[in-house]
Image 1 (cartoon, rainbow, N blue to C red):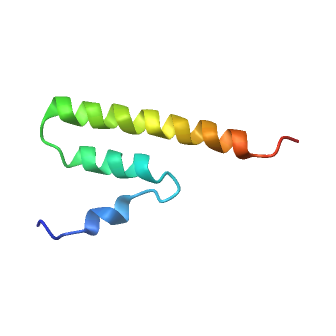
Image 2 (image 1 turned 90 degrees about the vertical axis):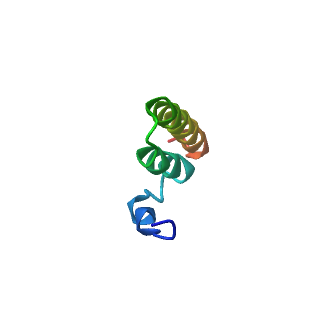
Length: 59
C-alpha cells in the first residue's frame, strides 16, 4: 500500500499543488488535519487563480 501511487491518477494537473494537497487530505484519517489540508488547498487554489488572471492579457 505504501508504494501504491495510483492516487496520483486523481490529480488535476492544471491545478498543480492545490490538487495534490486535496488528494492528500482525502487520505488523512484525522478530521482536524483533513479540514486544515482542504482549507490550505483552497487558499492555494485561490492564489493560483489570481496569478493566472493577472498573467492573462486584457482585451
